[in-house]
Length: 139
Image (tube, rainbow, N blue to C red; front, side, top):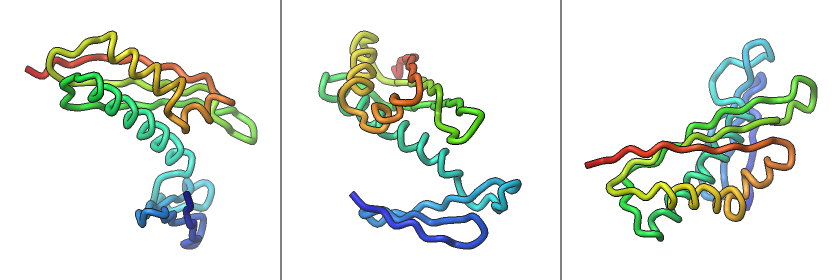
C-alpha cells in the first residue's frame, strides 16, 4: 500500500492513494491553515470508522442479515500534550435492516474490533476503544 502526500501551500496537503483517490487536508486557522480540508487526525478517525464499518457490513451480510444501512459515528479524545495521540475512541453503530438479530450485530462488532479492523487494532495501542449500537427496523 502506498500514498503520496503533496504540500499545497501554507499548512495544506493533498494525499493521493495508490488506488488513485485524493483527499485534501489542512490545518486549523490558528495553525496557519485555511480550512480547505479535513485535519489529518480527522482523516485517521474517518479511516478507522470506515475500516470497522466495512467489516461489520461484510460480516452481517455473510451471516445473512438483511441490512439496508450502517452508520458508524466515531468520537475521540486526544492527549493534551504532544504527541496528542487518541486516548479514547467510541464508535456508535446505527444498523438498519429487516429482522435483524442483535446478537449477530454485537458479534460482528466484536469480530471487527478483535480480529479484522487493522486501523482500530493499531489505535488500541494508545486508546481505549469502546463500541455500542442501535438497530433500526426497516419494514
